[in-house]
Length: 436
Image (tube, helix red, strand yellow):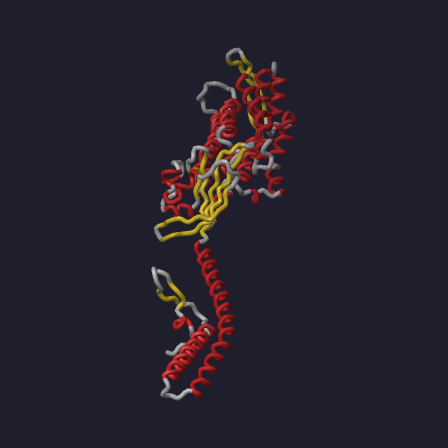
């Protein structure tokens, strides 16, 4: 009796815990599952405590108001929790509940037809009267249906383990074991395997262990504090590098993009200290922890060269307390180079526009100087020493005109070495009007 009451108490206690996570996928079906399991174990305890065959039969029949729904809610919980809630349409759920509802109705009226409980009798074991059941035809229909649902749930967990991040796999194993333990006991009971040498159904007692495991998953394993398996495909497909560190700065999850960035496989990284395995980005682990969130652009030295990344570090909180940190690195190297090229182009355009305006202003005085020099050359004899100097002035003004024309015609950007490692614009190479 005591283990049964304890299991019922834990089940009903988990109802309130699940209520706090009512927005988490699967929590509603988990609540219904705990309600059905708690009711089953409690009523079986009342059956053992009842005196006389009539009282025991009453509670034996009453248990079927809960028993048929356990596998249904179990599978519904797993489908929702593993990201396959789309399979649970209202019509499918209603169809899934058809046999359990029929079983409940037939069980409470089985005294008339014996389709669920064909007959019952009392046997005494250790001074306690035990109700020994003989089952009817519909009971076996119900049993096959329940085991089919349980098998589907176990298969769903088994398939999900291969694609579940290591951080979450322990929870999946707990769910699998908590399901298998009581139903294996039930299978031995129904097949008449004489293992425990008793007529007592071990299934409700084994639910005690099952509920303890589920309680551990909720409180210690944080069953409702983590992201369902369905997130995995999304995280893995992200082009950005995603890393999650726990409070001890251990890597608890990393996606393929981050593995490629680091140059290691996930199996070599997950569970180990981030300061050891994160390679070129391990210095980010010790970034300021007091900030709510960090967003900035950083440069990293990678094997293939220097890369530019947009870094985001965000805390993951539970009940106001930080339990992990999320690192997202978005590769913006190409966009940064494109931005730099665009800035260079804009700077060049502005410089050329300025040069064009200056050249336009200079052309008039240059032409004026050249014109005055020609007038002076007409008035001075060619053999006069002054003539040669005036011709030199005219020649230099013509060169200045050529330079301004080239500046106004620049359409591309070419540089030449100057002094002390500096570069300047090569006007001759940059202007299409140069002489080939």
